Length: 153
Ligand SMILES: [Zn+2]
Image (tube, rainbow, N blue to C red; front, side, top):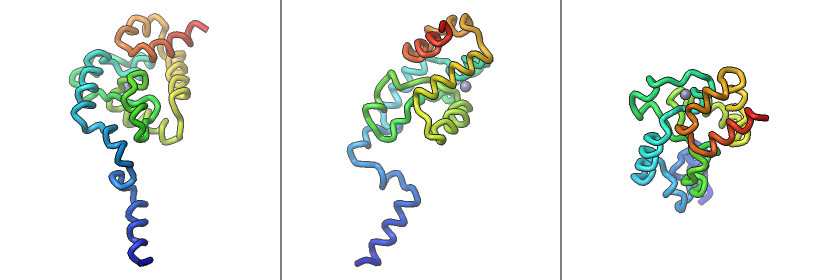
């Protein structure tokens, strides 16, 4: 019986997400129709990559197709359906910022507070408050608050 256990343990260590994920977390899946609809509405409402915006590199060419834009979870949800569906935990990122900047941020184990700090620091370097304010209606409220609040201090 022991020998049949070993291969199962090794399979899990290969990182098969289907095996690791708990059954009740399966609703928190970016493949679901509910999520795809939310993401589509979200990008329509908030069509700017926030990281490009604070770096002053955001321009309309980023918005030539929704496939270039991702709805990102600011705090990684890690299967938590509360975090997954919380619209205060969502932001728009372009493909590059999502795949490079945000991924490396998360790989270092950093969360929302450090992400907001990064955005504020990038803005100090590259952007003006006015530049961001002009676009604030295209940012989700929590993000606009986090970024603009810091500039006034
Ligand atoms: Zn970007």
